[in-house]
Length: 274
Ligand SMILES: Nc1ncnc2c1ncn2[C@@H]1O[C@H](COP(=O)(O)OP(=O)(O)OP(=O)(O)O)[C@@H](O)[C@H]1O
Image (cartoon, rainbow, N blue to C red):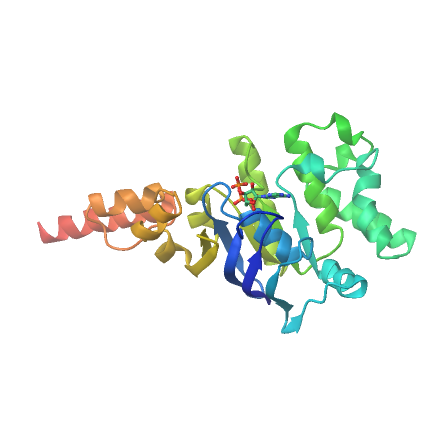
């Protein structure tokens, strides 16, 4: 379990971005991190990954507090990996294989194991064909997958992802979602920043919403049906939660299939009553 308690984080000369933010990522959890542009989602992810040292507050993994010394950060990063929103910021080697190898090599793993991890990761993501490609020639969607591969090759127990589906075509979003589902079923805990409330509702177990430097966290359908909270975070409710009450449906359908099942049940009920 990864937790942050009462984080205060700021950039020099500015008001705090986070002003007492707490969040919990349970073991095997799928948590969506939402909030307005500039509210502090990336800053929170960077704090959780150890990349940004908060001014105050604690970050802990399985109850053990993160120490920002060299050793503490090294241990933390072997378990907790951050995938940046802009993949180009994360790719710095000449070709894909070198880039994905970088982290595992830094862990001091034997070359054969590094090679096996890279091959397995590229295969899992369906990008073996990119192995020899120059990183600067990759398309945006390919860059996103290669940046993710670099993190997965570290075999982390926690993945923090900053807007992994943003800018992808619909098929790309479906592929990315399938990859996240696969990681989840393999036991990885996932915290995903996104602006897509429909995607968050369908995918996550819980939502963490950043408002005024603090985080409100709870079951995803409950959080994304809280109109006042959503308005304060400049979010609109997911379409299924907007439509269900208009159709007089009980419950909070999270997907098109759940919506269809509720409508079908209502039609059957109506037929029986008539
Ligand atoms: N390196 C930095 N130096 C100064 N200010 C920064 C820095 N990084 C972020 N900020 C500021 O901190 C605030 C929070 O930024 P952050 O990137 O965490 O927001 P976000 O919720 O991820 O935004 P978005 O949804 O637009 O990606 C913003 O006002 C931003 O301008």
